[in-house]
Image 1 (cartoon, helix red, strand yellow):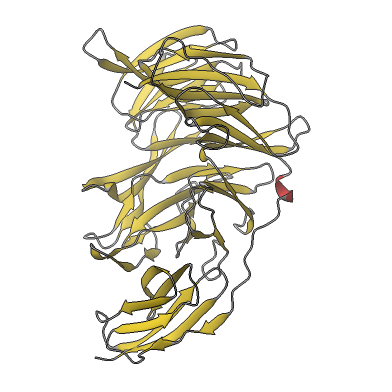
Image 2 (image 1 turned 120 degrees about the vertical axis):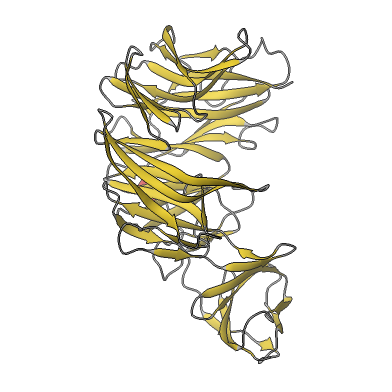
Amino acid sequence: MIAPVVALMITPINAQHLDGSVGIVQEGDQFMSDFIVRDRTVSILYQHLYKTRPDTIRLSFLNSTNISYSLFLESNFSAQSMVIDADLNHYIAGIYTDKLINDTTFIAIVKLDPSGNKIWTKQYEQTGQNLQLIYDGTNHIYLSDELNLFKNNLEGQTIWSKALPGRVRYYDQSLYSLEADSVFDVFIIGKFCKNLLLSKMDTSGNLQFKKVINASVSLDSAMFSTNPSFEILNDRIFISNSYWGRVDVDPSNAGFILENYMVNLPPFGVIFRPHNYLALYDLNGNLSFANSKLLMPKFERMAVDSEGFLYFTGRGFIELDFDLSASSQITTSIPNEQTTFWVRYTPDLEISWIRSLEMTVRHLQIDLNADGNDVLYLAGDSEKMFSSTGRDLVYVTYSNLGDVVPVRNPTPPIEHLLMNPNPSSGLIHFNTGSSGLTQFSLFDARLIYSQNLLGDEQTIDLSSLPNGIYLGRLYDDHQVKQAKIVISK
């Protein structure tokens, strides 16, 4: 039987001017729960899954000997979130299961001093599953379980508790929450929602506003993912998410409609293909920017440096378009063995550079080194970076962030694509000119069909389309081919 152990590791690191990485290798698998850098000292909260000898687990390092201390918390405490106060005390929140009382579960917070000694433990009634701790920089800690929000002092005493569903962010002495509304299940696939709600609360627990910020337009088929990315950076609210159908990302104003397209996916037939979008709002929830297009990635982690440059990470597949403007493309192929991309944008959302990395990034943070320069930390876990026996904890540091060579693709030339017969009643044959992966897209006044192709000789069936004139485009890494297609039946 596989049993979890939660551990906290603290290690000081030196300022690095070149790329560097640290790995923690143990028997079994490690999954990172939280990661914090404070004054060039790294704290890692992680879960260790092991199969044998549950009482003899040891902690070891590769590429680092500067271990301050490490400790294990008991195995029936599932830690999820961590904060550090101004005196370097650690607060860890998790779900505690009391085996003596019929497996009763509680939310628990444990406070540790800078040497790892326990100061106190507090328990709260469990209402939700996903825990988050927030430190306001002064004398208070907020605990969210995505259903309720508790405001506590540093001794663990609750000052107030309020219903505040969703993921919470603390910014400029206010609390913001993004909530999935009208959630429903889709068989096998998972949970989706019809709307996203943005709430703002002051530090006394008074609700300032609650509004629908993303809404489904075609209620029968449109929906959002219930796992949006949500950050507040330099007075702007960033939301990156996936959607299906027609949605509105500015329902409180004139409206800003996004719409994806249908794709033929045998054996399911014609279905909506999911699209990703990025939307930016001011601190009152007013839309300032939004875009969605073919191959746009979903940004999962976000951070900003001291000069206002933005850093996003996410998971890559085949080819992604990193240009956030509506008309142009900057596409980059992510190698199969590289599981994560990270990209830098200017404050005006112009791309600076793109990189890929062989790890799953779960945390992204920027701290200053001893010289006062920005250092970026990517933290998570990887199966390949340090060992081949399981998932190892990894954090990678980067400095000189403006010196990374940009990855930009020139605008590919457009060539003629020979298709026959043309006009056609539906079946059309053509040669892609490539033995690799290409993408065929069809337009009338908008994109109405897209399909990935592998190999040179191809036949597509467009007999379901009404008679008319269409534009077909074939994309690969080097060029774009297009043809005017006439459907006549």
